[in-house]
Amino acid sequence: MSSPAKDPMSSGPQRQPQSMASPQDNLIALTLRAFEVATAAASNAADSISSPALTQAVFDCEKELDSLDRQMDERFATVLTQSSSEQVRELLACMKCMIDLERISDLISSFVSRCRIVASRLDMQDISDLINMNSHLESMLNEVSHAFSARNLSRAIAVLRSDREIDRIRNLIFLRHLEDQASCAGPDSIHVLLMAQALERAGDHAKNIAEEICHFVSGRTIRHVPAGHEGSIEQLYLAWLWDQYKGTH
Image (cartoon, rainbow, N blue to C red; front, side):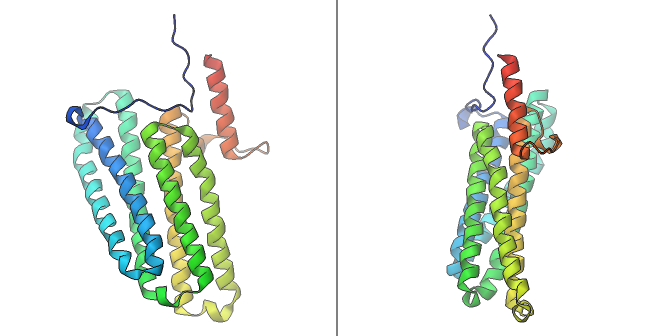
């Protein structure tokens, strides 16, 4: 008797204890740690807006992510040559996630570096919007971390939707500063625009990770789903997954 089809939204298998971990499991553990560090960096960045002295915590996160990225680079090729085709897919997902997480860390560090310069002179609306952007970024990173560890498509797709809110807030900041020509000419305004842009780009990298998780878990990349008038790209992707699921029942 054949086994029942697996729900495409269900969680993946549990990992072995660290004492029994294979070289591949160790690389996955590096990736999961990178998710934790990147999420902490986003959280500390939000705190640094009101307390610039806390920026060092972000730089510490960036340093650790650089170390994790180097460890991945050093071990990846060797482990890859010893892996099955299914394991190769998982390892490639780890590598792609690590690259995006390291880039997110760089962008957050750029954000707090500028924040340290202008924090005391920021407008209250700018503070509120930047903290809000940071909060959404932190939530996105937390969600992709859980989506990766549990192989959970629902949480990955939720991140794709969350990215729109970061874009919306960034656009509001740009409109507010660019509408006032006198304000736009000032150096503080330039810093605010670049800070907002750094967070928006970090959100794009989190979205890239969510797309990679969708591809890894389902075998179908969301980037190749044809656009249409009948729904959003996420809705079309979910419809395809559901059709595949029903076809195997």
